[in-house]
Picture 1 (cartoon, rainbow, N blue to C red):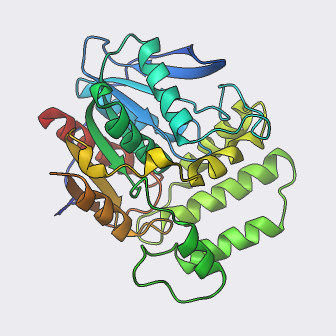
Picture 2 (picture 1 turned 30 degrees about the horizontal axis):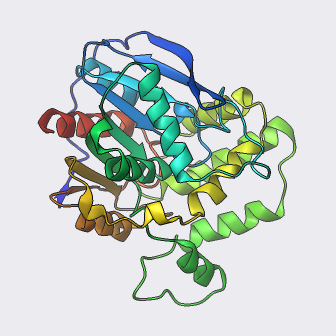
Length: 318
């Protein structure tokens, strides 16, 4: 395991390449996508986490990747951003369906195979792709996530019930995060301002208590997510989709052949570091980079560019 040095002097990048957006078709859904960088450069598909549109990948991170010679594609998951929403009650979906969306994005750009970088739920989707669609995956960077076949539900339930953690299970979220979650569940936000304020506070807690919190960036992300959404309740569908443990998620990760880097914050309040350690241990030849002070987000000044450099380094050697 290596530790990323937070005081490293990072190179400055030229101004960001233009971002070009378009819809692609995934089954009967339209997904909004954005491409940045030279289409002739090696492609990186960025897969965001639960209930968050593609803007969850900060422009600064995208800029670092594009300036480093990568074609970068990010997209809004179904039920977020400009992408179509789904009647989850009538047509529930699973992680496999969200992985198929990622493949549809690659197809929409005529990309045979790409480097996959996924954060949180996106990291689990990346694992699914590396297991079930290995011909489409040049490398995998799994950020702030755990093994896709591990259910976090039992540890979560024990913690909410005030029970001691199961020593044979991966650790639950921190008490501060659980208190925030419980408080958020009891008070419904009122209107746009209420939704944005609640989301900013959620990002504050997810950032952890070590690295400084970039509140303006968190507010911009919360505003973007709210303003682009056609159904503000739809993004919550990602939670049951991500928790549904289907047989395809239980395939051993030892089958992953793509060069894999696991990136995890030492202060992640949602998925503490042992989740990343467990993931790296299950994938042959995977490397683990622990980022000191990082929580469960990219919302700290300088952190997006730092993560971009880590991804660039990994994809350069894959």
